[in-house]
Image (cartoon, rainbow over all chains, first blue to last red; front, side, top):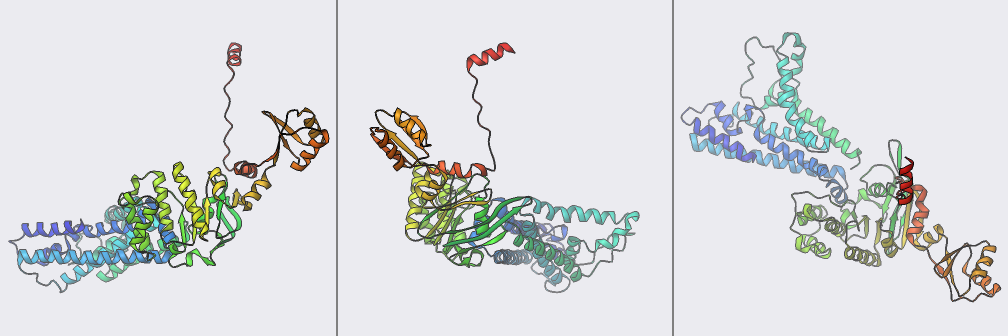
Length: 238
Length: 316
């Protein structure tokens, strides 16, 4: 499904902009399937798989037969984590390869695909997708269910962080300005940028971190969620 | 061999399992009995490391959590329907088998064995409770384990299924396996179990063989039948026995059969029957766990006699 949607974006873009020169923005958008429009489609679909990996065990009570067949809890989580990670990496690479093929079919070239900033932004997209999926995996394990994890993983980047960002523009709430660069999903999205974001004239100086430092904040957030979930999983009754 | 030592589990203010220690021997079926809420399922979950608490359980000397491929050593059936709704029954077992290096061929074998061969590719969400129990047993038997832990395996089974389950467990026990099984069907347990672990409110009430349990928790009775028992009744009461007339017989409590025979001989009573009536496991269970019930229901209120009801109606 994720592959289909991201390929669809590339095809749609190819049909609409086939007569325009292929610039960095169009090329990146085509290859990452419109990730820069908000949450990357593929990350969302793969995060659902990440949430299901543990959340479904509790939703359907299968955690009991699972743990009686594999009682070493860390071994179980590690196995699930490896499967989810490898699946995400393979699907993301496949999606990017398919979309690159679409670009070659439509424009016959993909200039600067492996160079900065396009290559870096595409690598950042793959890393963002993986971290986002790991956050989903951690939330599914932490909440021991699917609905709560789904709500958090969509609500946090799309609503909560957007509200904090919007409020930071109000002079009376300017104390929120230094907080923005630490918002995990906002920081993570910097991994996929081709050019630094422009918030318009008169906007506050968010003093955002660099691409990789921002990515590090997102990764740190994922690590905190995963570690907390892992520790609790080992301590809680099944 | 299962060795449980000092199993303890507390939920906030409630002690669910209170320092239980017992052994489950191989070669026999050991029944695990207790009223609702007595801590049977929690004990089994503690034994398998699903719940965290105090104490230790060893399966042939090893803790469950340290066994790398546990399905080959310990088979467990705890809940009736823990199945993924989109996975077929066969795939559910294949998934568990894969983690324990069990071949797919064995999955088909156990599904045939429990009678689900024809429906193995169907999703278990459509299974009846009885079919789900059979799939649960198939899961427990997947690795051909030496030890089986089964929580209420006969729940939802029809009489044929219960009979089949009893035969299966007794056969497995006769092969030298360790079988630990909880059930509420006491008549079934009486036929199936050789030994018992009986708990109430999380504490041990009895651990030993079924005969000893019945003997220990019930009073044996002597049945006396004869053409003329009036004199004998008086003589037995004089010896301190409790005598109840039941049809054409006397049921004597509080005296051994030999003593009853001696009293009959002394008063010259002619006897057509002198026998011991053994109490059932159910009677023994009720006697042993009566004060340990966690959830006590009210006795049903009898409907008032029509005449009485009418009189009360008039009074009102």
